[in-house]
Image (cartoon, rainbow, N blue to C red):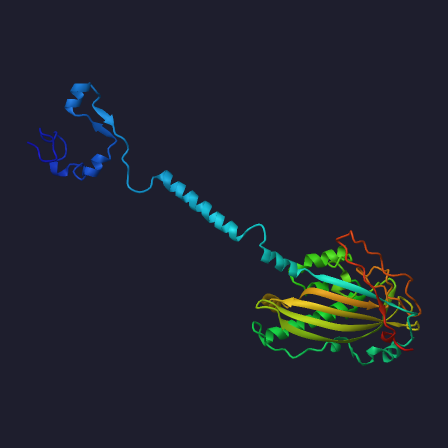
Length: 359
């Protein structure tokens, strides 16, 4: 009789010995039998039903999730994650974000000041300055005096000082650089603005408008180079700077300065009469910590008064000063259309006699 793993009649001739049976390592345990897809009918079943010797068994339900269920769970998890991501990165800005964008937009008002009579002039610009309110003003950047920098709740003294330096540099470049005043250059000013203001700045240059948003003369001082030139490069300046913290995120610098220029007709030469032109600029700059680090000044508000000018002129693109001996055009400011919602109300003022030199 054969061994436990051998047929009843013993191992076949020429085959391996029972101890070396190649199937001896295969264990047909209970789990293996249950997993079989085919099942042999019993003898009684084959006699009664004349059925085939075997039948196919239904698939065994394994513990855990099936492949289809696992895929479904993964899809649900992916959809849920996408919903959360879109909630955080919603294509529509939240009201707070929209308010922040609105705050970053630049708003400008430029008010021309018309003289009541003829504009006084003199061949010597120094004589004009000596007999004007600008007699004691400092020359150029020296007139933009710096206040003592102090730390705030969320900005260090060094950061406040850096923001003040950036504003002073902006004022110098936008109101004292000859290439900006009459040469049409804008890059010295543009590079000091943060990237999110470049679009509005560029639109102001390409399509200037007195709409409160796109006045070139709100960003910088620009004269009509076809009609006037500087009679004296030593521009007189006086004003103040003040730093305050508006909240934990922003530092605000307020600049209030008066610039006085000596001008004459373009190409007239040194013998021509010069006249004084005054620009008062009240400006607000906003800084976050990144602006301070990058030495960029976000200009939010600019209120400009300039004269002598005619009230009917367009002051959004360039300033066209009235020169020595000229008078303002008769009539009031340009008409205001109350139905044009994209236009600011026309504003014009009268240049006080005391603001002109007594020559």
